[in-house]
Length: 126
Image (cartoon, rainbow, N blue to C red; front, top):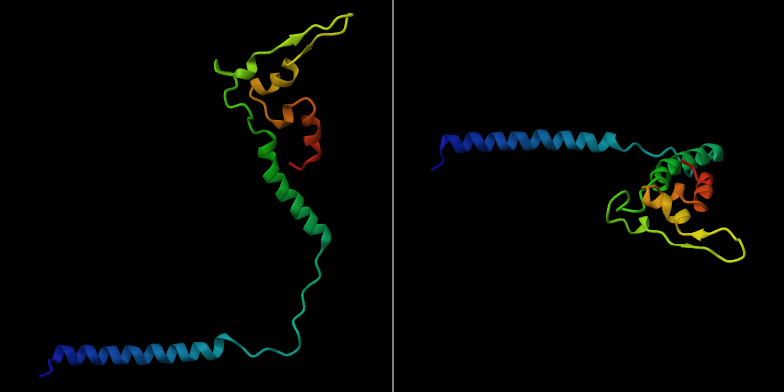
């Protein structure tokens, strides 16, 4: 025994399947046109624009690294780089200390603030 609700639901399902099947068949025929023939060719690359894009992108990536704080305890009482050692050589030579190297780090500086390496970071983009 078949109820009317089941028959109506079955008819609606068959109708929907027919509509969806017809729509997808039409989409399949228009979605992929036939190739025009001949091998595909690539456009020539503009080297100037490629280098400009690379250097500007590198600048945005490297700039934060150059100013990244290297000493996490800088300007705190737990900073071990805040302590320095100085040696006074004989014969009137100027004293040599660790404060020149560790001073910028204990102040919260980054790679660009180091005495020798900081000048070299100017060559990097950013």
